[in-house]
Length: 148
Image (cartoon, rainbow, N blue to C red; front, side, top):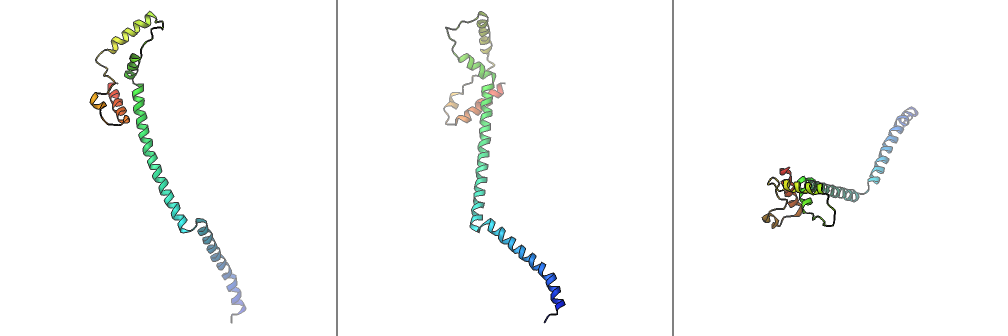
């Protein structure tokens, strides 16, 4: 049998070691219980990968929308577009026109009639294309960028 001195030494040093091992085991059980069963972990991983796919799809769509908005801004803010829109708007006969304003309009029409500004309409062969509206807007924006 063990002597009382040996038993005392074993209890003094053995008890804290057993307590630390038991604490680590309990902590491991708590962490395992918090993460759930393996099926739950697999479901969470599949949900995470699905969400990552959705985010990448949304980023691609956002980039496409930004490109389309830039094309539309180019078209709308171009001076040729403004001139074409202003010239195509019918003037009202009932509105009183200032003689100076009428002279200015005549000068603007003379300046706009020059060969330097290409028409904004797309050619017929392009119009007959089965392309999307965004592609047509991109081509028109490119033409306007070249003329500016």
